[in-house]
Amino acid sequence: MMKIDINTHIFKDIKYINIDNFDNRSKNIDIDTIIIHCISLPAGKYDNDNVINLFKNNLDIKKHKSFNDLANLKVSSHLFIRRNGELIQFVPFHLRAWHAGVSNFRGRDNCNDFSIGIELEGTTDSKFTDEQYSMLINVITSIKAYYPKIIDDNIIGHDEIAPNRKSDPGVYFDWKRLKGNI
Image (cartoon, rainbow, N blue to C red):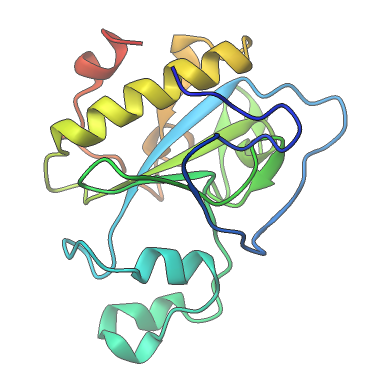
C-alpha cells in the first residue's frame, strides 16, 4: 500500500508536479468519490509530456491541430497514470482539482467538490495496460484507507457524472478487473 503524507496530502515517493489549476474544497465536505478518466494528447499518442503541459497551462497548441480546442483551458487531475504505470500527482488530495466539469452524481452537482480525479493515459477506444491497472488498484486501495467514506459504489467513470458530455474511461475499461481487486 502507498503512503499519503498527512501534512501535504500527497503520496510519498512518487513524482509530484506543482500546478496552479486547483482551489480549496468547501469546508466540511467529505471526499467520498473517485472519478476515473482517460486522456492522451493527441488522442492515442503516448509517451510525451502534452498532458503534463496541459495541466501546467503550458501546452503548445501549435503542436497539433486537435490542441486548438484546448487553448486557455484550465484543467487538472489529482493523479495521472501513464501507460507504463508511472504515477504522477498534480494536486494534493485535500484540494479541489478541476477534472469533472459540469457534473452530477446522485443528486449532487459539482463533483470536483467531493471527488478525487484519476486520469489514465489512453483513449476511450483502446485497452489500458496491465501496469496501469496494477497502479490504479494500488492507488485506490491506498486512497480508500486514507478516506474511508469512499466506497466501491462511488468509484465511477467520468461518463457517469457527465453522460451527455463525456464517455471516458470508455468501453475498454475493465471495471470487473478493478472492482474485483480493490
